[in-house]
Length: 379
Image (cartoon, rainbow, N blue to C red; front, side):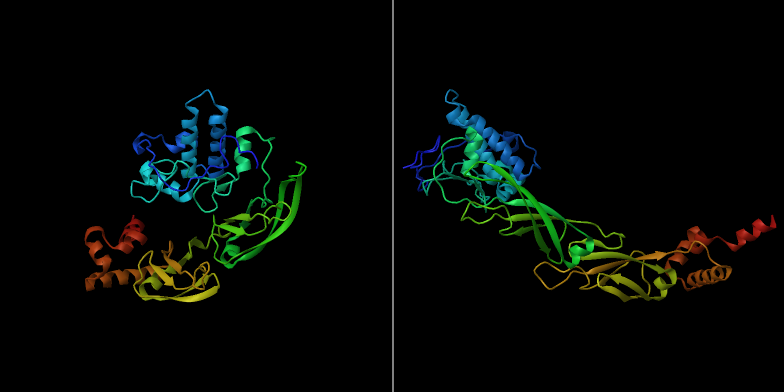
């Protein structure tokens, strides 16, 4: 029978919560981010590194003369269990310690908090595993004890180890993200031979097919495309983060599966209605402009947006109408506009008639007055 790992008995087991362990109240606990000395926005890798540092420093087996080390070790472990699990961390960020207290009614529960004193530690198969409590949240025990004791110890024989997961990013153009693309990635990573302890650099090419509709910040998981495992074991996975560039000419603006564009229209089109050509993701379409269209009106082209992931449906294309007011007009155009303004006043409808009583014609404000121009000429 192999020797037990330092600080933990390989024969230990915990079959149920036969007793309630009393812990400090939520309000008396230190902030978990403060415990691990990490920022609130720290990523999972930073949290893990900070925990390993504290675990090595305060592990009871390396601090036999310090009675407080065990409490600090337990405190760090509890903080790590919560902050390394996305669901637990979200509850903690929103509600503090109460969010992860199993007695608070939030449905959470990190380490400690009146629960199983061995929660997160699993001895059921005779070996030591530390679980974060979330999907895929298991820490390699070899890695944990290497952090404590620096490696070089005799290890219990174990089965072939699966290869490590690799992480990369892929950059897509706006169009590639919308319609999908195939990208070749060059992988370069370090691999350690467990039999010799020697490390080597591995390089290979991997093709990733990005689906239509993928967006910036999303992640793709390529099963079995990670690093090689021990002989007889499977490869790890390749995790690819997607970075999407904005539309190169700035015409298309994406909001999830919806697309926004602007379309200039004339004053006459706004008043009388008409049509305008709109460039969409799949080509140019003719869009009808209703009569009496107001400034900054929005028209909808249904189903002309981005395809939804794992679906055949698409978002919408929203067209923002931008009325262009001419800066220069001909005398004839001015005459017609003034006639329009006078007609509006006489019929008593429209904004122009109401504004004219207080500030003169709205068109005079834009284009000036013939009377004023005549006085200037006389002078």
